[in-house]
Image (cartoon, rainbow, N blue to C red; front, side, top):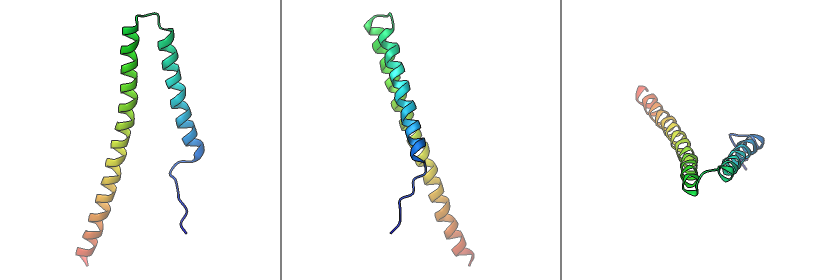
Length: 85
């Protein structure tokens, strides 16, 4: 039976999630202690949530495009090898 192989170590995954949660907490603390009206705090919160979600989406798109490019190159490399024979 094949064993699952992950690209990242558990320590690196924990570091990534830990730093993400740490900075989200810092943003929330900063918004809570901000001496501005609720409207301004809401604007900053919307911007922060939008930035976080678009960062996740962008990283997924970049990863998917890279994997598609590798798959495309592998597929046509095999076809070129077959045609050369």
